[in-house]
Length: 328
Image 1 (tube, helix red, strand yellow):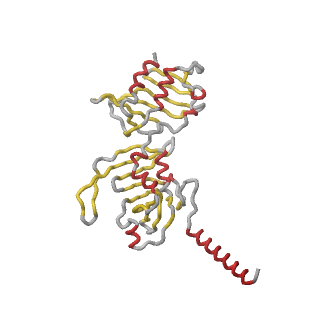
Image 2 (tube, rainbow, N blue to C red):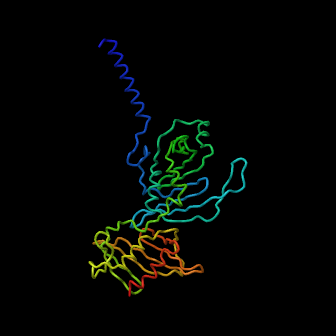
């Protein structure tokens, strides 16, 4: 190779290396595990106290709590309605009613770990007033406040980025502007549908080795049969009991619809079911009934729901009726 060819090749290689370094310093490597690009900071979820989201049609407050079972979240969700228009600030909004409160566990954790610590797609260059307006941040569609034990962070959420599934986000303290995944925002906007806990237990049914039904003064010890083949009496573990198996299958299909922190005094316990592995109690389920003008309402409380969850009407009626058959 001639001398000038070698020098040209070295020059092009140097340019390529410089460009590669510049790209590495500006681009963000995707995080394959989280499905997002980069995590800013390393704050632990246990440090988070609350999240407050003030959106265009709703207000959401998520409080973080922990008990012997693990971390769970209390969600306050308020739908907002339109009030008189303000010619300077657009349409102001006021709460239509008291917030609905409910429990969230795994879905709440998934929603909050996207914000604490903050997950972003990428940071944008310093934005001037024109860019701030273009991003929808001059009059943000929503605001977000994250409060931990030691600090508070505030963000403004702008419009969606054209041609992508991302939103513009501004750190109100530093002024830094980021792009965040749309799903991060949508989980908070749709908190009622996406965060309300519908599961009854956090443990796997395969861990259950035995259990007890408490029905008034009576109790009934049962065991699950191998391979998910139903349930049997603890005294005859190899003999499947059809009535018990059918009853337990119906119990598994119960799904919380709304939550109450406390039950009315008129509510009565119908049955309590406890579950154990070989050495420890895994959890419990207690079914309550409340007789009212519109009929009987049923509620369920477990180690996972913490609060009392209302069931869809008709979902637990047969469970109540069939108990007498199991305890004949």
